[in-house]
Amino acid sequence: MSHIPPETAANAEQISETVERILSAGTMPPIVQAGHPALRRRAARFDGQLSGDQLDRLIALMRQVMHEAPGVGLAAPQLGIPLQVAVVEDQFDVDPEAAALRKRSPLEFLALLNPRYSALGSELASFYEGCLSLSGLQAVVARPERVLLEYQAPDGSAVRREFSGWQARIVQHETDHLNGILYVDRAQLRSLSSNAEYAAHWAEPGIGKASAGLGFDAGPVTPAGH
Image 1 (cartoon, rainbow, N blue to C red):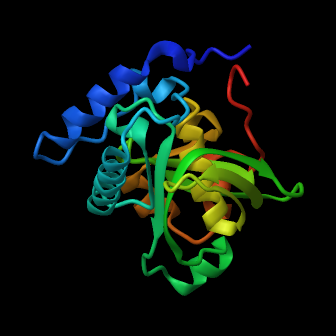
Image 2: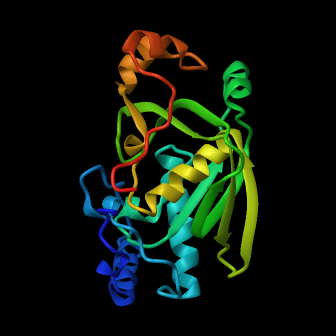
């Protein structure tokens, strides 16, 4: 049985009011951190709670927040908005060796509404990942190497698209946010490192050095309650 509170916790009017308050504030909204209730609730499916203009403005703001953080993805709950909307984009220059090992290639900007993913095949990839809502930390997470993502585009069209490598990791991470799951729920907790300690001891394209030094394996972890 899942311990995640149901999406009925927020109704359409509350969501619209929250979004409008953030949009009209005139300042960049903060990214909420672990412990904020919005990060532990299954967000409400997008079903017209926002006008077209509100949705467009929210997506534009989320993209700006993501860029300034900087990060490769942001989910609406990270702004305290319990709605299934996420944005992703990866245009960073990455060390070629690391990019090759992690199968990391540029990802164009996408806005995802009501996404869900399913694994394609049984292959897993284990790498360190971080989160803008757990500032200063990262840990090793085993995720499916290839996934099928089904989502709704902002224009209302239904999309089915396969992702692999680092792109698959990004869309899984953001979709998990919309279901009240943080990456630490899936992580090898013995791998958990501050960014400073990771840089000092374990920075390499793979995880072999950290696995030996910190005493963890690369296997998957199932979040409690799932």
